Each structure stands twice: as C-alpha cells, then as structure tokens.
Length: 348
Image (cartoon, rainbow, N blue to C red; front, top):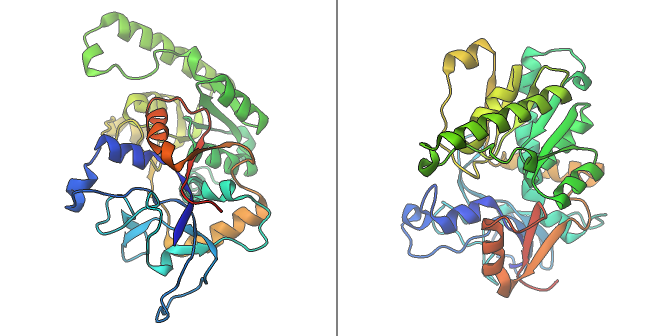
C-alpha cells in the first residue's frame, strides 16, 4: 500500500518526546516509523490472503490495531508500541489486509475529512461508554438539563458533537480566536481558556511559588463560576478530559454529582491522584478507554457517512511530506490552529 494522507496524533508527539514511554526501547528496535491513522491506497493484495476485502486501487482507512486482547480491543497500537509494525511515514509499506477498512465508493466526504477518522472512531467508543455509564445513575432526566464539557482537542470536539446530537448542553475550552470561532460556528459554547491564564497545575519548579498558587486559585474559581453559569449551578454531567495531570483536579472540581469523567487520552500527563472517598460520595464514575473495538469499525464508518458526523470540510491543515519536521515542531509548540493537522505522503 501507499499512504495518501496521515493524521498527526498526540501519540506521535509522545513518541518523539520519548514520553510517557520510549517506543523504540519498548519495542526493542533501533528505529520506529510512526503514523497509524490515515488514508492509504492498496497497490497489491497477496493472492493467498484469506481475509481480502479490498482490491487494487481501493482507498482505505488504516485501523491502528497491533496486538488485540480476547475481546478484540487494542492491547498494543500499530506503528506505536507494537513491534514490527511500520507506519504511514513510509512512502510504501505492506500490512495485514484485515487492518484496512474501505472508504465508501460513493462517499459524500473528502479524503481530508476521512483521514481524521481516528479522532471520531475514538470519540464514538469513549462517548458510548461514558453516556451509558451516566445513564446508569441518571436514568430518565432530560439531557437538556445537563452540561457536557471538554478540554480542547479533536476527539473532545467529536464527542461534544455526539453529546449535542443526544440533546445535552455542550461547551468546550479553546485558547485562540480561531478555535473559539470554530466552536461557535458548530453550536458548541466556547469557553476562552485565556480568561483563566493560571489554570494549569504548577510545575515542579513553580511549586514553591506562593504567588503562582494564589493566581491559580483565582483562575480555578473563575472557571468553576463559568461552569456553574452554564449548568444552572449543578456542574458538568460528563467531562471529556484528554489532557490529564495539569487540569485533573479542576475537572473533578467542576464535575456534578453523579458525573462522569471520560478519558481516552493523556496529552499532558498520565499520572493522576484523587480522594477515593470524595469521588465515591459524589458518585463520580471514571471511564477510561483506548482506541475502540476492531469489529465495531465498519459500523462507526457507516454512521459517519450516513449521519455526516465528520471533520468539518475545510477545517484540516495539511503539511507536505518534506515538512513533517515542521509539523511535529508546530504541534508540540501549540502553533497549529486546526484540531485536525495532517501530512500528505503520496499524491492522490
């Protein structure tokens, strides 16, 4: 196969930073070719393949499954921590045909829209589990009475669009004029992160800075007041938090009773702590998911195609192959306004 468009994901940034794990060391390999989500073109199918569902010339989604557990969830991710897997940053490669999911031939959506599919498949799985858990405790109340909130990111955006379809109030933090406008245009209440400049947890170097702690308390209090205004004083019913450590205590503080924390990523830190008693008394449910279940892939694809639950047209930004180092630097330094950065490997 040959890659056409790849989606730049947080796991690629983590791999380059060698944190939270060093994937080369973990895989026992000197070098790793990254890139496990995007659109590829099939060049040739092995004639003895028993699982062939694609043919030469087909455009497909690469499913990022390396090692599966007994229930078909990903235990190791393709082109990340799974050994002997080669990602989309190679101009040509070969892979198990079972990892290729054809794009509908008569699709109404563009290739850049499909190339961001990973954020949507991940969001679909995380949202279905989080919403199901919430309903076990809030069985019949109208979602219109409840707020779903997300820290910024493409997966959170996709989940909030599902929450909006389910009838919830939806709001999301954003840190630039471009993203604030984008959220507003798609029916999500934007909460300008710049209004709370000291919201993140102090770093190790800042922990002894009393003034830094004072400023943070002020930012947190102002943010919680905003959440109360958006939720009639109740707090967040389902909080999509894929950031992690720097904002985790704020997430819990903003959560309503019987609220759910929904997590499928850890962009800024994966080591967390909380008071188990306080979480139990408040009946908070913590939902942690990773990727999705492989057999669910065709159903999610078909839902996206039929319902139009897709990356908005024109919202992607695409870097040419020789500018991938620039893409990596821009992503790491927060210089990309789009929630959906991509790289082009081969021409269509």
